[in-house]
Amino acid sequence: MATVHHNPDPTNRCICSDGYPVDEAEAIAAVHAALDGGINYFDVAPAYGGARAETVLGRALHGISRDRYVLSTKVGKYTDPNNYGNDTLDYSRARIRASINESSARLGVDYFDIIHIHDIEYQDRKYTEWALTEGYEAVEELKRESRIGSVSFGIYPMDLWKRIFASFDIDAALVHNHYCLNDTQLLDLLPLAKQKDIGIVNGSPFASGLLTDQGPALWHPASPEDRSRFRAVAEFCKAQKTSISRLALQFSSQNPEIATTLFSTSKPETVRSNVESFEQPYDANLVAEVRKMLQPVLNKEWSYR
Image (cartoon, rainbow, N blue to C red):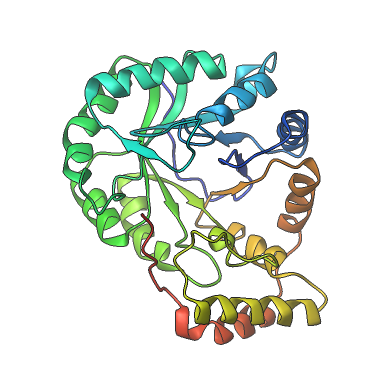
């Protein structure tokens, strides 16, 4: 039975398939580029693209030895493929067990290294307690049955993370948007993670698009003023002959206390560029300047729904 352990070697990099329109052949090429580049962890979810992401990843991994990669998916959040963005949250035992079977069929595997209980804070936390009781118990059952290796959550709010770390027996934690240039609150969780042997997956090094040249999607809750601040930082980085996304990835992935950083792409050239960026140390002076510019929004928590 696999268990995720904290590992101070920051070479355990990963790629996530997200829910936006992609060219299937290009996405499959991105997975193969990831494997060729030394990436060994793939994360997906039935909510991404109305389950299409799982299907495409399954095709990409077909024929590849199972011992070459670590695989995780999620349970609890589901999206209608004909109405993307119309999410259903269901943390019942029956739905979680069915979800694992469906994901197994799409991905062509009979075992998941990690299952993340997904976005339990969404819809104004209406279903949070359901996820923390029946949902958690259902995933624990799957671990006891050796269907999965590790139990995890994939959520955002720091108050919920602190509660989970203190009160639940989990193996891993997918913490997103809390170790990037504008938010380092993940550091607050590391002492207890080390004490309890919880493996950390650091998600969203680009702060859900804020730390990119193109900026975040329209759904992002950042205000016009905040968006303008991030655009100014992106322009500043260009003037320094680099990009905000390159600096963001380097900063997020090079902390020796955080073994795994997860980024999302469907393009092989982006995979190769991110691997190359990871292998070059970041400019500490530039990071300090950028964080100074972002001071008004440092550790600001956004209202994701």
